[in-house]
Length: 53
Image: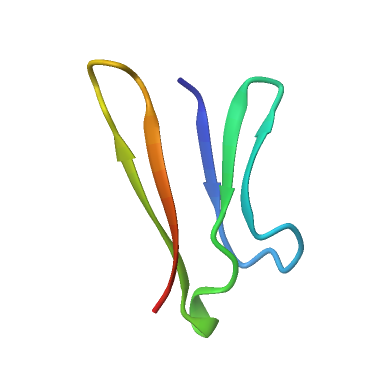
């Protein structure tokens, strides 16, 4: 499981897959954007929830 988490990039806020890697762009934290990411270690599945706090 490959995962990249980035923030502050104004474009393409959200979750996407690029060449087998999950990319999470939370957006700008200064505007309350965040993400909750949970990994099920047994199955390797990710649960990703985009948040506005």
